[in-house]
Length: 77
Image 1: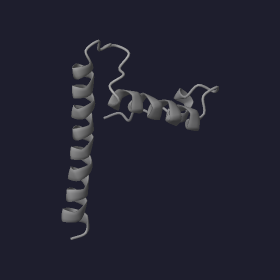
Image 2: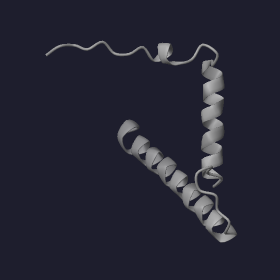
Image 3: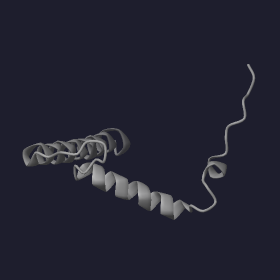
Image 4: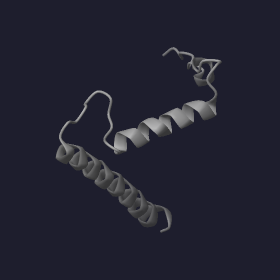
């Protein structure tokens, strides 16, 4: 098997964009996603918007709860 060189992740970041700027942009996109303000799917119905927000919030709580459960069960054992 031949070992292919892995691409350098730092070289893929444009020079004008620092790590902090890209992290802030990603955090802002995630915040807009969980608030239900997706640019690709404009919701005209307020009920649909709140349903999306509630569903995404519950999924986030589920992931956090699962991570805590797995940490307590397998790491703190």
